[in-house]
Length: 508
Ligand SMILES: *[C@@H]1O[C@H](CO)[C@@H](O)[C@H](O)[C@H]1NC(C)=O
Ligand SMILES: *[C@@H]1O[C@H](CO)[C@@H](O)[C@H](O)[C@H]1NC(C)=O
Image (cartoon, rainbow, N blue to C red; front, side, top):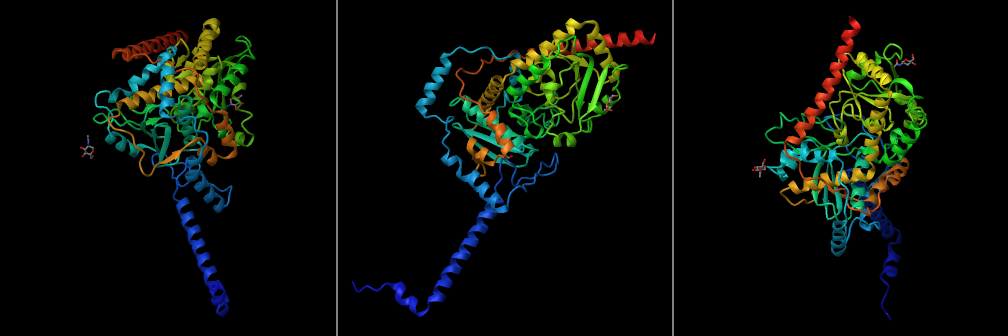
């Protein structure tokens, strides 16, 4: 042997110094590493809202992550963002090429039912790019108005995050897209989409007329290019105890069956938050008199009810009136679908903002058009009309409920599928995730979710569809939308005329 162990010989002379130096180097390396990791984590943006500022165009208080230590947060961000998708086992959305081909063959051999008529509006929403198509320039300019970007490539989803979204909107919207990939594996085309998650549309048809920017959000108006996309609440809204849509609809429908039409209170009901910069909601407060105006108006105390778990505002207990008022808030309101679900006559006070399914609304067929001019009189007129024509009023209420029943989650996914497919056909470039984007998968999103969010997300999980998406009609001819809009306007005018004649009769 005769080969001296270096450690033993040398350490005899300066044992403590040697070990101290080694230990100190390790410690400083570790400190540097911890510092680097911490620094890295503090620059990592997440779908839970870490390291993101509110959108400059709509400031709201930023989310505080205070329920955990800094170290725990750092670990969680690194773990969820960089280490989870790589080892994800639940890979249902990603098929091999052969499986994809098989699946497509199978799906195209199946007959599918026709999509609801309002799906036609996909063509109108995308019409601004039908000729020019969508270039990477369009996308990059839309970025200035976006809170995040979603790039889907070969069934994998990547997000590039720019700004925070209020509450859990971002997380639930991304969850919805992941569920779509799972529902139709191998079928969702590659796409690159810019999203804003705040309420008001921003791409005006006049200012952006010469170069329309494609931007997805939860609503639009007739004078905006913004493309409406199903809002987060279809997958649940944990902050207000609103359940994933299929469950929530079932609940409300069941609640609505507790009272027959004649057993329902013969006046109009509204409950909500009047303090949202919406003059119409302030005006509504003046109509709070069931004798004089046939209306009961309740102010929702959000802070109080949040403490009590929103028991007072349980939606299934709010179908006790024959008439339910919908008044827009700051923009569109997610409450529209819950109001229509009651089977009461929905009294819509001339909404300006429309979400994707609101295009299925036809005045006097499935809702009653109220007027903001002389609001209390308008409500009173609707209530009186309904009480003198109870079977017609009931039928309108029923058809409103049927509209919502036909909008099952299956159809919501179909809408997303067709909208994304049509959008992707217009892209004149091949989508590539930008270097700042991160892959998000089910596991990584759940990894970032708080316990209550996780519970909702899991309840809103989709499974692979046994049938293909509903079949989208061919693009209607260009007059279709004008004719439909004119038709709706005529009916609304007719109701206004009835109101006017009635007012005149009363003053004489
Ligand atoms: C895209 O934008 C850049 C800079 O704004 C411009 O130079 C270029 O011509 C644009 N390309 C197309 C195809 O419009
Ligand atoms: C409306 O009137 C009812 C009964 O008079 C009252 O309880 C309620 O607080 C009123 N609502 C508002 C918003 O003032």
